[in-house]
Image 1 (spheres, rainbow, N blue to C red):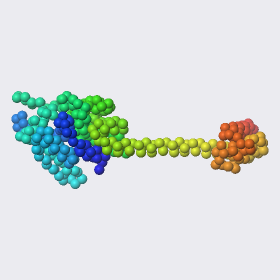
Image 2 (image 1 turned 120 degrees about the vertical axis):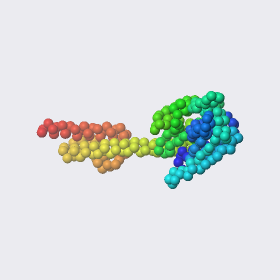
Image 3 (image 1 turned 180 degrees about the vertical axis):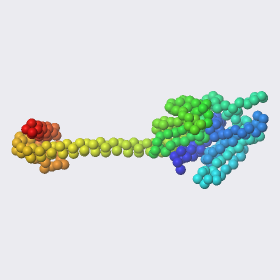
Image 4 (image 1 turned 90 degrees about the vertical axis):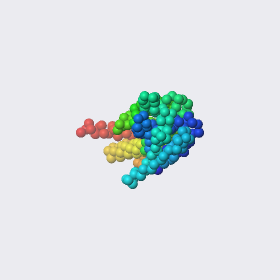
Length: 320
């Protein structure tokens, strides 16, 4: 089961007891997953479709508890085996679709005509608890969240530009920096930062999904930190090995040209130790001397050896 499906399963189990929150969640679910069907003069049927049986059960219970309407639920089996079943909730005009559509703010009706709107009435999202419930319903109806192992991305897909702006504004009230893009005739409201995705999951009540995401983030951070340390140590080791090779080449060159005895005693002593102990660090080389010297002292002597070698090279070039 995907990370997104687990999050939806968790949210489908949350059941608000206050009617105002039930109405807000239902308003979002209908806007995201509902379709209207003309059934005669000024008569509308409401169909809500979902692939998730837990969401279908939640919708059935919310409509029953909030409006005392017993809906019809149909299961449409997809002939292609890989595709999931679809759960269709049908609320006809006779059953009271008008009442639901008016209360959730989709239908504005008078004697002469009716008007469909995607703007949410302020009364539906007046309280903080209702704003959270609305975002939860929107996520259940048309939201998804990526597997955090791959990327941090949470989005809501809606068919209406007006509704995408409404969702973005609602999210901004919780200090979330949502963006909108057009994708295949749909408006996508999305978050891309890990912290923001965590905050939204917290707002809608997906606390288990939130903890799982945080665990993944911690593991990823640890992996990144370990890789950074290993890379740093590898780089330092390469530098040390390269420096050691260069020092040995200088000493060999002096031996083969003028002879190691031409070096002053203090430089000859460190040169012999360097060739004998190829893997030793500068600090370890310093400890082998009598009396011992520090790392900077060893480094100074090796630089002097390099300068000595460079002078021989320069003289050789002049003679040629």
